[in-house]
Image (cartoon, rainbow, N blue to C red):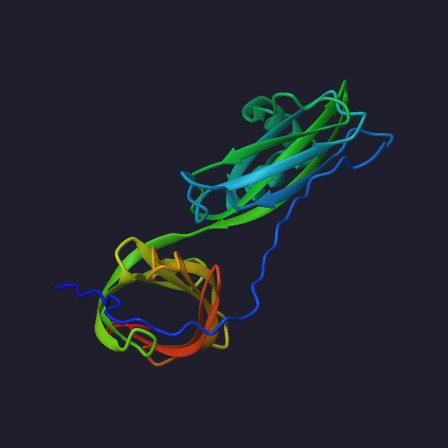
Length: 253
């Protein structure tokens, strides 16, 4: 039976520097002689799933009369290109894709592409009469599968417990399901050399009076054990770095 580690004690807050950042992209690509677009990628917000959904910001130049987009599995697009050529594929996108509403002339438009699992190419075709140009961007959607129950040992919370783990493909990632609080998972990005990165993510909804608790850090995967040095932080500051150990089920990796 799954066990969760919950905080049962108070901790002295070591006030540290706080990082705040914001990102905004998506500008007009200029006044080219032919219709053209620039495509930017963003992770969509809830209720979308950033593992399989993608927010695109499409910026058109002044020559664009209309534009269409189509998301296809990489293997499907390559097969279409082989059979109909690049010009034929642009016509295919116009016929079978989705028209981008509100995109005409020097303008920007956002579209969200959903439900992508595996390697995808999203093609955008800018059109002005018989003149057209294609731009593409790539995305790899994750497929998560449960691999069973493992263990975790937390130096921050001072305890051990069971935890369910998921594994992603085609990009190797592991996910600990609610290790510290139900509904707050931790995702581990695993590189080819088995180094592990934990991007900043929430792991606890309300830690004492400090609000949401976040972690980030680095470590390594050895055999079936992920050992990471995680920095625990809240909006007011940083608690410090702690060694956290996650034991994958015996069948992994």
